Image (cartoon, rainbow, N blue to C red; front, side, top):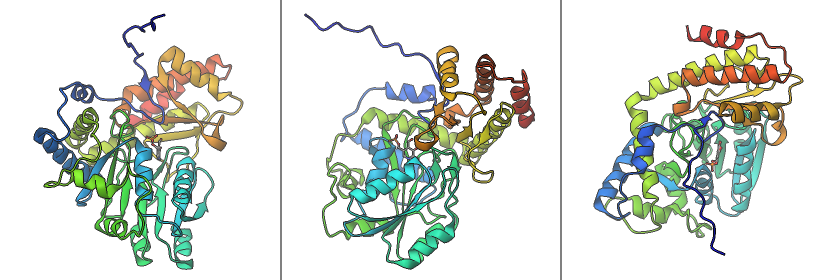
Length: 393
Ligand SMILES: Cc1ncc(COP(=O)(O)O)c(C=O)c1O
């Protein structure tokens, strides 16, 4: 029996307002469909140089080692840890959501002694707790999640780099849900290793992990006594491909993804970082004003609330999954549910990159209002949209 050949692909045009991926600009999709070059073609190498320069601008760093790893955000997370953590090293990890938990998990898999600084989900880690941990013993690295996608909390980074360096530790920061949506100031905050993913505020399909390492981090990585346990993510070998004048083959670069990220970064820089951050803030404020009218409450405290990922506790008495399913099936809008202990209790609405637009805020509020009304909830018609509109004025 011959294998039946499915029809040509025709995915639905969803409005992606979940925790990622986000909407992608047509220019990015167009870039992906341009002709492939070889991964050692001088024309492609020049494209890589351009991409690196733009990544430095978005990470706000002068770090020479600023590249895009093949793989999603998790590849960035894993590379950040496997290259510096050796068996017996102490790693202090802020755990206030799913992704802090993963940082701790990977650190342990590297043979590190993990000090988990647990904080209730939705809260951020006070600097004093990190200081206390650093004073207690010799720490190799401190790892925190800047934008905790599972809770919508934004970790303050002010003073953290200096604190880590005073104690001889590296600072590793997960900027997967912040890069391109809220300021990520690698040099000003003294971040030694910072990584992200393409599919969030950079509005590019998933597939690359932008990552930058300070000279201090490179020194620590090169002073390792043992080999990096991951061959694929060994940055010392990958560096030889990204370094001008070397260009040694390690693995075949995902050419079309590099094109896509180059175009996505062009869009970010054309808009300007300050304008982009303000756009995320403004639309998040309007969305939150509308969500409050629908009976939702923000999971993170004001002042630590992430504009790119709006995590709200669902209205009392409402079963959240059917409402979310109705949004997808009837309005073509994707939003996220809760992870782990927040499962069934929150919605996570991403306003990242191209998704952070007024029409999208109004569309999701309108669709939620309808779905809640149909679920039997007493909602005042138009109140959420009016509150959002007022926030825009
Ligand atoms: C904060 C954070 N870190 C890491 C990751 C992992 O990224 P990916 O799913 O692209 O591998 C995610 C994904 O949502 C994330 O939100």
